Length: 73
Image (cartoon, rainbow, N blue to C red):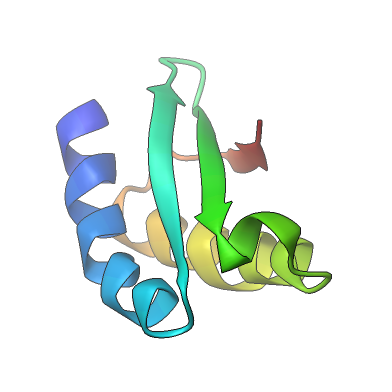
């Protein structure tokens, strides 16, 4: 599962990097919980939780159905 999550994140990264941010995969647990770290501009952006839930989590759930939740660490 970790490889598929990383592959999906690689598709998201260019959009985040265009705004000066990035996302790093910390852990993809067998329980369906994916832990990521938002870095760069995304780390301090007030909209980062919306980006995380409405963007990253939605796309990961579409690409990897086993994903239940994405949290920022």
